[in-house]
Length: 438
Image (tube, rainbow, N blue to C red; front, side, top):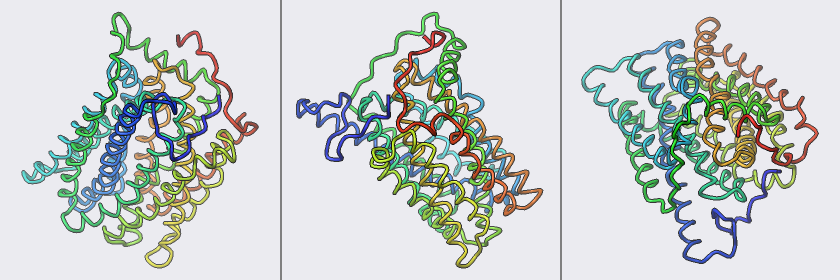
């Protein structure tokens, strides 16, 4: 089945996709989706600010080295490697909205605890590593539940539209988050800035709690075994030829792109010489590409085809990363902005297409495990990326590390270009679920 065409923008997003629903039910579904999007605004804005403020706290208050900044980035992503597979099996046994609320409350506690530790003079790099690791665990469970919950909320017929709207929210938050983070760090310091993000996480939990749609309680686990559930998710993903290729391609892109993310704050502050506020605004302008891409992806899928757009989006945009290491503290900072902007646009288009496809072809009872399996495969490389970035930065310098990651990232899309996707315009019909996954 090809990725479904989205509704016109004036149509509502509803689970059934039917245009003949009672007005009261349609209004309620619109309200629920608005609450869901508002929760995303809080979370994505908070994540964008934390993404800048946490390494700035390490650099400015603890004078972290390149290796320590790399290890901090690795700690943030380690949960996807350590708990990625069982998280899906656990989420499939629970109501997904409840998991998202619990993840938000965990983030609230963690972020609120940092100012207390600082006030008691207990802050240290080991403490930041621990907080980053636990924040990553909360994000893992929240994201798995989030992507598994969306089809329940909007229905399969509007997944491209629903994912595009959420990507627009995410991109807008990424656009404003780093700039706001830089300004807040300049005014209140990184500790005060991180404390403020506890409020956004709490607000997200409140918004999710107001959604009216009630999920059915999953069937009791009974004699189900965790390892068997994990194997079912792995069998489905690895036994599906397109999902297998998407996992390999995404893992390659994540490995190199996250290496850039791990050292870009250090590069812009110490190598280029920008102030924290300027760093925030540079990273902010770089996300304009994501926002624009999220707004036009529906039209692009209709014009180009979802399968074709999946590999073209990366092939055309990833080489722009070669502009990043050429940045300097003059007009050359525009090279960094342009390179990041175009890369962000390509990744956003790619994500919308491949996530909607995954949600469409996966049986509902496997959504959590499929999502967690994909996260394990494609995000499990991120801790490796953070450590690798730290090692390369220490051995060769941060600028050279950026050159290495940018060059490797330019070649990553060849995984899909050399695959059957190159001969497809749309994705194929949904294959039967493998016997091992039933």
